[in-house]
Length: 88
Length: 250
Image (cartoon, rainbow over all chains, first blue to last red; front, side, top):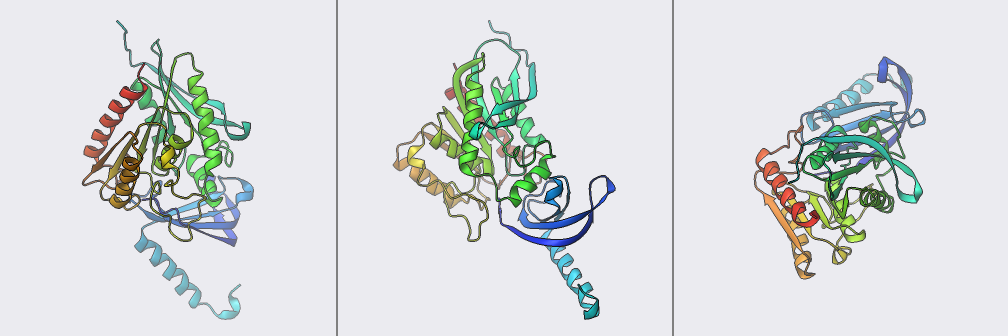
């Protein structure tokens, strides 16, 4: 199936992308659909991008559902361990 | 006697798409002389990629002029197919009216080739399967193939971000024979969605043949994916060959 469901969010940060260069990222899209590269019928896909710099300004992740949940938990755990006054 | 060499030429060209825009397209043609039918290959949502170009060349090997328009060209000219697809997805997908304009341009290009016998078919996979049926309901083509297109029937889930609906209201306008190839383990389209399609086609006295494969789900033609199912894909290719030979021949 193609789920097509796409969740979008804006963001502020940096990513290391094509040609090993860091770039500022402003947008992310998250969706569960067929991957380009991962060997699974469906994966949780994350595109972290700066659309203003063109389609290639993108870092892509294709994760199994289990891996995606583990990543989400790890992110929450890492943030939970930080004193509140350090969070921005 | 006509000599068939298996020689073919494949190249990137520009065609005129929706709104008079120049868009990129991939054209594969047999080198042999004579006239022949044309096939518009509609790429899937992951883009105008290597796998779709391989399919386009296969139609040339089968004896057709085959043309695959890059439906993502406007958003991402020159970008890698996966980057272009990600950009288009973030924009909500390809609107149906623009898609139809681009395919109309592809059909005109094929019919304008010196080798054209005047007949043109369309084929699409995945999201392109639905789009192939949309073409068959909207544009002058002679045969259409739908490979597991979701939302020809059935309803897109709530919150669905792409700008599409199902084609139930359009199916009475289907203007050419339809070949549908589906995996029984697929959920979009599910066997029930295919049942609904068959009932609508039957009720409207349309020319169609639908084939359903056990042990296959979505994307069973995709040779580079886990979902590839060799038996279903081989039989499907044979069905496509026979269908196009019947409807696109001289």
